[in-house]
Image (tube, rainbow, N blue to C red):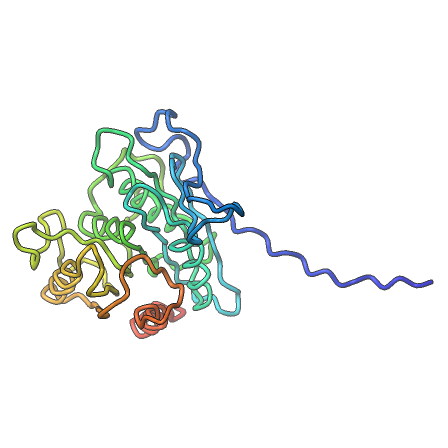
Length: 292
């Protein structure tokens, strides 16, 4: 009697996860409860709306998602999920985005930043520290991860995009004390992709950016997506793209009539959910996917 062994295809190894800080993150006292999924569950135990919401994040990490070698362009993008600085939309605006980036030859680096604010600070202060540190750590490990340190961008959704705009406005401000040699590197992304971003504008003149949003010649190029019926308001993307134009910084803005907010890249019958194809074309046309 002969037995034929079935060919077993090994499951792909999970992407490596790297702690962002060698010890506790700045200002953390270890008094936050355990990190948890705050998503409302149905009777079957699955998320009611198919979105994983991480809460009580106090230990920031980077998850390194590499594309197949045959596709790898050497470019990388740090992914900042949204969630109003209260939670992180972990799959909708995180892991699924990394998979899409991998499909176009880009390493997706998923940033798990601290939420919610539990100190007497602005809600973006701890995330800002994490975003600065993330960019520096990625550049410090570029050779190890097969990344071109001059082609490291960021993509953010809603509050995650707000975080990127704040970082691009003030990348050189030392938001924390130096930890190691990585902190000697630049924190400015080489390019940004802002998807239904929350961009602050003046309360009495929504056509003008808020004073803490600064745009100049060194602001990174941007790709922006918004809808006119987005409840957070479309004025911010118009004001930001106009400021980029005046600063002679490359920008591509797509405003769709309908689509709302929080769609990630999950396809619907709304035209706005075709934005990933537009973004991939932009990345290629701007030269970020060209091997150097």
